[in-house]
Structure formats: C-alpha cells, structure tokens
Image (tube, rainbow, N blue to C red; front, side, top):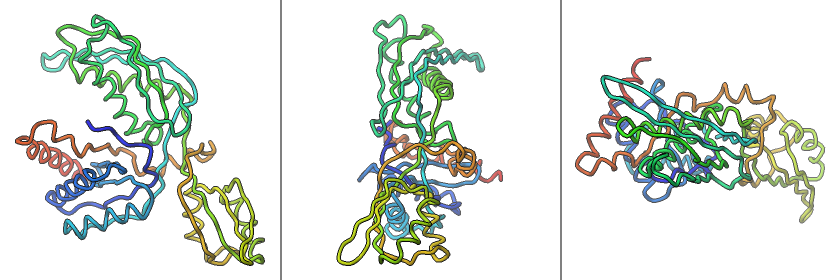
Length: 334
C-alpha cells in the first residue's frame, strides 16, 4: 500500500451515483491516472449510496479534478457542492490491546498486539515505532501488517469517520501462534487496538481555518465588526492601503462558506477577498454533534487506487472488476 496522504486535503466533493459499472471503472482509473502524477488527494467509496468521494486541497483543485474526468476521460458525471473535510486527533496518551481470534470453516486466525498512542503537535503527521525485538513476541513478517491496519483505521476515521492525524503509535508487545497467525489477523488486531485506544485518548475534532484578507471602504468596517463574531473569526487585524481598509482574520472554512452563501443578506458589500488555507484547529465541543451528523464520510471507505497492482499486472484487471462488482451490487440494494 502506498503512503496515505492525510495532511493536505481539507475539502471533499461527492461524485454522485455513476450510472453504470463501466462508468465507475472509468472514474477510478481516471483518478488513478491523476494520482500517478500527484498524490495530494484521497479517494473514498460509499457503497450504500453508490458514491465516490474525493478529498483534496480546496474547491478549485476539486473542480479541476472533476473537470479533467469530464474532458480528458469523457465522463458525464455529476458532482455535489464541495464540503469541509474535518479531521480528528487525540489529546492523551493511552495503551491499548488488540486481539483477533477467529475460527471460520476450519481456518483458525490469531493476531495479538499492544500499542501505545500519544498525541503529537499539530501538522507533525503520523509516527510508527516498533519496539518488538524478539521474533517469539511478534515475528518481523507481521510488523508491516500492524502498521497497515493502524493507517487504514486512521484514514477511515472513528469520530464522524473523519481522518485521524498527528498521532504517534508504538508497538511494544503482543503474541502469535505458529499455525494460526496470519498477516490479516495482525492487521485486524492492530485496527481494533487503535480504535479502542483512540476512543479513550480524549479525541478532538479539528477544522480547517482559512487566512482571509478583506479589502473594503472605511465606512464598511462597522458591518464587518458586526459579522466577524458570528464567523468565529480570530486574530483580527486592521490596516489601510491606498485609501482602502484591509481586514485580516483567521476564519473556520465552514463559517467562511456560509458567509459567501449569505453575503447578500449581510451588512457588508461584496468587497475584494483573498483567502488561503491556514491550519487545522480544535472545534468547539458544542458543535461536535451537528458536524458528525452531517458527515459525508459516514460508512465510506478509503479506496487504495493502487491496491489492485499488488496482485500483479495479469490479475489487476480482475481484482478491479471484482471491487467494482461488489461496490455496484451493494450500492443497488437501496
């Protein structure tokens, strides 16, 4: 599995219900082609609503992706309005155990690991430390599946199914069975350990905050002073240049999008705005419930656009078709 990029994307767009299985295939292959050239976006699939979700760096990039699918790959696709991509992290250090023991059709499976989760500073990314030094605890062949299980759980998310960022995970103990342990057993055990630990580590919901500069006339400043508190603006500064007033502020992306939608109803004119991504910051707790309920990532799964390659070129087409068949059948149940 290629490295999953969680740091850059801060908005999502939904490709609404492809019309045929062949169209699903063309969309995924088109996105794969884009990902081969740059990896600054992530793809999810949502089976029950039969949707493909792209997470990327802002509305312009997402619209360019959709435009390229239409123009270069000849796809007549409908896309919904881009939405905010929230993320999550943890605030406390915890230890967590993951144990996966199953018997299915005579096949035994056993995976067991202990991990420690620690919060990291904002935008510092994911760090995985392996402290297993003896094969009799966990053999080397099962260490990569442990990391893979954790990374996939992070990208799928737990709180609102939003991606998890800025976490250090240390694998420090576990056990295996010489006959029953398998790669998948440890992958699942690690994902269970991470999910349990995340829930106990005082999770926090994070939102993208934009750096906004508004150029206006001096007589419009009272209108902005009235509006800015409702936008949860912070770090507000006033300046002037060439007879114009310049207001700069850090504004959560959700509030900024709402501001633009309602601009004609607010006591400010349509002045010149410059906006760029700033940083992620904690969401006020009283907003958690609404944001989680509105999440468009509910029951969505990260889709590795390169996952079919691992089966070899001769089998890649078959595994891709199998994935699409499952996606299509489950999507058609509603």
